[in-house]
Image (tube, rainbow, N blue to C red; front, side):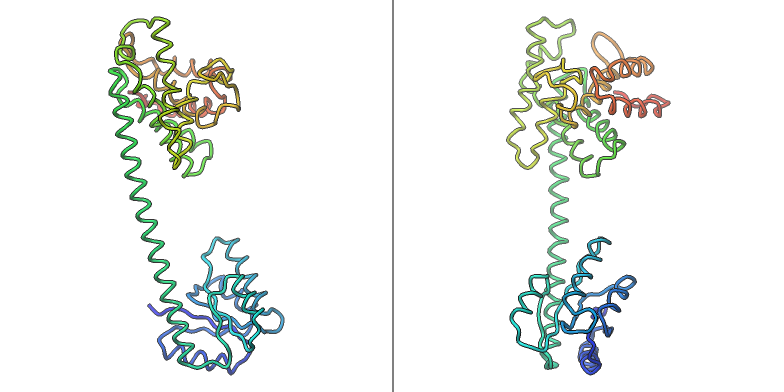
Length: 336
């Protein structure tokens, strides 16, 4: 595909000469006589490279480029590479242009060979940069996918300790992501909360299996042992600097909105939002999972418990969203 080069200059001779040279070199060339025409042109047309004269009436090259960058930013467009045409040796002009993001300068009158080589080399550089960026994006996505797989594997290992809650961490993560989505979080934030949800119970790794799987009522000592898992999870995750919020879900998912939770007895907005979301999702899954001493709690009872806990155990905003999700689940599929 021909690469599209636009030349902006008020000098008709320069326009004609540059167009002839670059067209013969295989580029698709458009000539415009002012910055105003350029700003109208970019609205409906794509440009691979812009050759922009500095000294022009009405809008000079610098003013034109400033308005162009502003338009690109407002419309979330990729910046068009710019080469400035200049008819003098003013170093200050070059400094100004480069500081604005221009990639090169070509002096007028130009030599045909120099113009062609500068344009060709710059477009090749841009292609290489874009290819490199695409490769980095690809590799980043591969690494992220691997990271999710690793975290999911860890979550499965955590859940395997508990005979009665297989898949608990994955379900809590899914519910948490859906709550975050409905609360208006960005896609990136939704995925972050999903990851936090997967590892919210990682501290149970340090709790004896006999305590976790005890079929009867726990003693006070056993219950206190269970209550250590948020702190244990926090210690495990706090040093993962790449995702510092992973530890938030582990430490704070048993805090209560009224301040009567553990381990830190935080209340209201002092509890991180991520943990407030996970607390609702965690409680819902606990009620809709089989236990040694009971089966899955009926949906109407689950809703009643969430309504009762709204404002005391749970953040009312996120409890209300979970209730919406339950009401839409008319066939009661959201359970273990």
